[in-house]
Image (tube, rainbow, N blue to C red; front, side, top):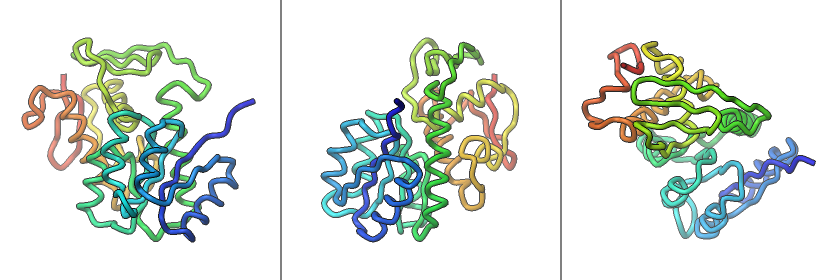
Length: 233
């Protein structure tokens, strides 16, 4: 018997938390709820959940502090859900490793759709969706090993989040091909791109910090100004 997908919801608004929990459980998810930051951090760090839904403004310990501690240890998708929807907070959350950002108020049905999308992509990427990929792709010093679910740079395994890995895997499989930010968002996140281009920019910056010898002068992930990105060999 397949175990249910486990989601950790860290949200201090009781009405909103109950609404989101009801929608997720109606779709068959197993939901754990924490209403303060410290408890949320302790539960999150157990690594027993498949996806984390994280509010930013929490009593005791903020969502960004939780994300800062969680992301270096666990690769599971993280969706930040917050009323703080300005670009600065969005960039900070994405820069710390969040996979996506949903601003309040939001449609619970849309949130569930995003949760499903991120889970499906993570499982497809890590080979936990009933697929057993065996291919290996090479592009310059980068190697994408789908069987081992890893990307290596000069024989060193890169520590990547799910979205970083999916972005880089797309570039490695299509070296030299130019992708616009809109196309990358549509291919990797699978959502409407309006207002979400910042997500791609932040993830690309994080990738460069991990793969480039000098992120300020990138040689692998090239920006074609006004057009997008490509993997340059």
